[in-house]
Image 1 (tube, rainbow, N blue to C red):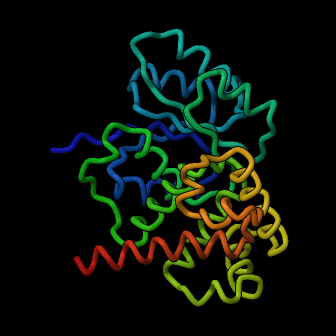
Image 2 (image 1 turned 90 degrees about the horizontal axis):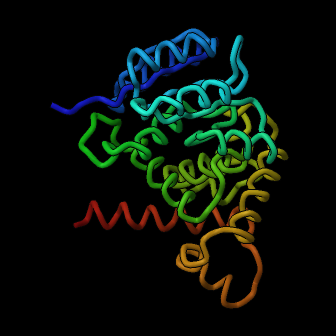
Length: 255
């Protein structure tokens, strides 16, 4: 019998809680929902000692940083913290991470992304959990690639890029109409505009090129690096990774 990963989840948005309640069990995650209140979260963590605690940065009575500071003084509790926020900047990010957060997620995001992240940080990540097959397997592979490349997961461009690549793997024809089809599709999902999607993806690629993992970039975009062509366009970046993934999938099926 596989031991489920225990997660304390705190939020006041019912739609968010309903989605978590529906999806997390499929990933082998056992949820305990707690009121959005820093002191209530501390009580739950002390009582149940969950593997992970998902909470908002700003909460009544005590914020996330205060919660982490108090819990980290208790040596018998090894809970990892994932912080949710509607916005982030370098100063806040530095303070959150220095306070012991394992990860930061900026709203809006897909619940599957949160579940993926918990699995990746858990010792049970590689075990045979009851996860959705095809779609989420693709998402996990794309997530792994973006992390290897070095694109920060808390920036909006990461989420837009991740979704764009998954969509391109499943529907190759969209890569030929990025502006007219792919960007609007992603924009609708995240309730934003196509131009913002385009700019955010461009920013994510720039970060990868300036601060990312050179060996991984060279593996995917060697022709660009060696020929000093410069950064790939958004469509080139999406196409290179999605094409590689489709090839991997076809080789697996044919094996």
